[in-house]
Length: 472
Image (cartoon, rainbow, N blue to C red):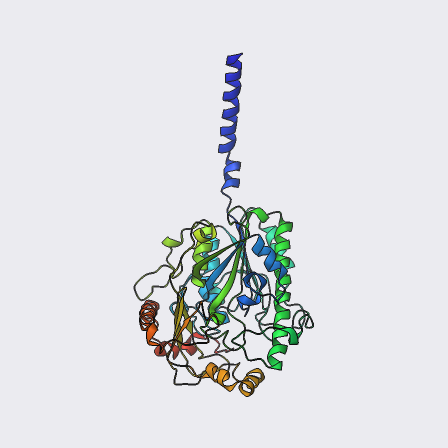
């Protein structure tokens, strides 16, 4: 009887071990995750519910946040559409990759996200706004969409994206959905959903009727974008692959009101970022680690089973390093780290944008406490499409001091980002902060040197980086 029980136990243990070593189980256990990356356009992170808004309705972003992780300190490196995307897709800073003005192109030989992930066995597609160049350097399977939306007809057909997912059987997929919303002219969504008179404006805004009316339209487009986020989440549910699909959502740079997009203030560079990864990312959590857009590609490669630390990007920095400027923050996502970068950096050029200053070069460095900005051509008048708008004229009429602060800036700016979240009080001339300013200035000098950024000289080369010499 004892011998019978012994042999039965041995048989069961052997069967379990064989099942565990079964190739099919091994494949399932080590299966690479699918990845869906959703990106807004000109969306300030604080205008979404997961990042503090109490007036803009974004229920699907809330849904994603409850099932995932919010990164509270994600930053762009450049607050303009095309350069933002290309720093993300190359893992390199905008001066180093060549795409530092708007509507620009990266240097020949630089590898990009679709190249890396295809090498790792992924099907790689993009639906929506491309806004990168040259197109040959970004071999996505393009599923259609517009680079700009005027509100006419259908902006995006996400059925094609769902069909792509269905056809990706046997291979993991990476699907990037890059929405046009809420980029102006703010024509999507229910335009009556928000009452301009009830809107609460940030401390960095000038309260005028036109500001309120345009803000209401902008809010309506955010809610419209949120509905598209919901379509994507439902698409994953229907695929039956939710448990093996990473979903990421990024707000991009700030909105196109003054002191946001086209600037290096937090309203221009700080980005909302949410990640859902079932079984890996703890639901309903937040992490304050500082990360920046060039870190996203190395992280995606890490998630997809590659080694981002051994990659030659096709571009050497000024120190001879051929690797990414970004680093994988996978450990942050997994809850294994609560700190990542000590500083993040910013670059902005007005040369080549619609109604932009001939050359108004700005550079910045930010840590968890302070933001330092250097305006290299501070003697000039800062200009862009906003400064020539009807809205800005109402600002000048209502509060000329605040309006002037947008177009006339000092050589150096320093802000305590904790006590002054809208960067309203410049501390650069305050002797109490001399040491802080000097330390950040040194950090910024080292970053510019590593990037091959020669400041004004680099700014004057911006037009050469625009293949069609377009502007926005």
